[in-house]
Structure formats: C-alpha cells, structure tokens
Length: 160
Image 1 (tube, rainbow, N blue to C red):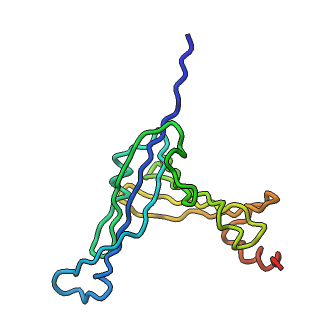
Image 2: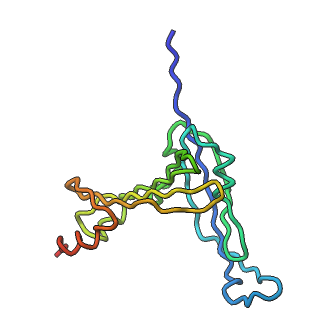
Image 3: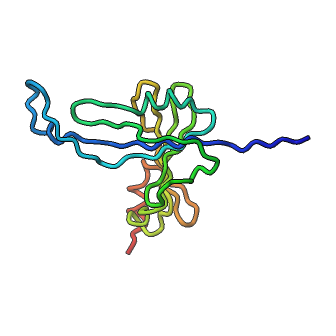
C-alpha cells in the first residue's frame, strides 16, 4: 500500500501600521498616537518552519511602527489566497532563523525591458533582525546579474 502525503504550507498575513503621531514627537512624555495602516506581507512558510518561532521573529511594535499577524492558515497550494500584484515571501528554515525569498516578475521591466525577474533573499534571525543576503536579476535571455553588477550592466545595455 502506497501512501502519498501532500506538502502543506502555512500562509501568514501581516498588517503594518505606522504611527504618524511619532513623526513630530520630541521624545518627552507619551508618544502621540495616530496609527495608519500601511499594507502588509504575505508569508508562505515551508512545512519544516517553526510557525510560532517565525511569528515571534516577525511581529514587532514600538512607538513608530508595528507589524502584527492578522491571519494564518494551512493550505496545500502555496498561492491560494495570494493577491497577484503582491509577490509572497517564501520562508524556509535557517540554522539561526529563517530565509526570506521574494521573487518579483512584475515591475522589473521598469528597470530595463530585458529584466524579467528580481529575486531577493534575506535572513531573519530568531530575534527579529534582518540581514540582506543577495539580490539577483534575470534577463529575458536567462542571464543572471548580481545586485553589485546591475549598474554596470544597465550602462552597458541602454534601453533606448
């Protein structure tokens, strides 16, 4: 008897708020509150990611900014409930936290018509600190360009 298991993904949707009252605050007394929603992020966690540890790392709050989980669910299709205009962030486990992988296919052509994909990988440690690792661009011809070489590539490949 053969048993197949379907991989499961946890989707986490966050809401970001910015405190506009803190922009003119002089630091004395209580910070004025004028919170405005500023969007959020859709995270898709691989099956081996510790969901509770990830939520602890991703949620933050101070007088100026907060990001909180507003919804989470387990799905079989990682793209279920994901809006097409906002690329999701794929999350995998790392020894000291999590790898966050964002692959954008929309809006990359505004940089140059031959740029098809922008892929960024960041590490989020268990304490909630980010370390950007790499951004790589892929052309329609399949050429890979690192973020450190993109300016030189753009100069060598004028779009007009």
